[in-house]
Length: 378
Image (cartoon, rainbow, N blue to C red; front, top):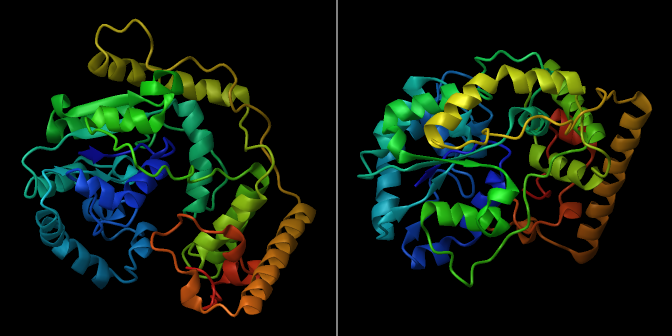
């Protein structure tokens, strides 16, 4: 069972669900491996994509050098096969949304498919799709979280792999066959039982255990102010020769999510309508292949969702956000000293689950420029 996204379709919540309930799934005959990543299986995308290109995913698995990436890729399939064999399960669940975005060439897709075929006799691919006019807005926040430095750009080419579902799916069709691919629309009214979690497991054909733990929603989108603040921090890091890398990025993002109370970033309506039109022909082809006989379009037509003026962050507001982060980090440090907590006391068994964000923030200067604090939360 290979879940490939797409990004911004609840993948973080689904992956956290599988990770938190890993032992329960195992007891029910489903293996959600640890090797590719404790929550999202980023190792799959690292194995599939070009290793010579800069990749922010490498750091998630602690792969800091090209030699480390090469060693991981060389041993990946053997180690994954060993973990799966040891589980004794007949059903393997793998999930990483970057397989639909960063595995952007046919050879990338073929590499991961051929590799997994050495482990599993059958590969079934599952993917959720959402309208491109929604994805460009919600996806921008995620891109900035991953280090993007450029402002939002709606001048998309129809060949853009991230948005061109017709082209992206054609690569997977060539690798596994269209009969092995299930496409679901990311529309709540079409979810089984009105729930993404129910829909996901029903689509996979996996019975959801009654005692499964449902984690909170993950991967919260930043509001317009905080996403622009983070983009500026990315720019500063890039100018300092860090290739956009910010030490403690997860903690900084968590703190910004706590501050994110305002409206989301918006794009002028005419630009979103143009995006809808640009990908209309490709979406029709996807609809014909995966929903034959359907009289409804793949997605509802754009009706003004997410439309508005392009946001500009003022210097005054940026300073206010910086001060708020500094104050919160100072308060967190004081609370930590008051209870005499050792660094290990803050460690979480699964990254990002159940964390108290007020314990994870620190001074924005340190976050932006890589001056990490060993006593801070990982």
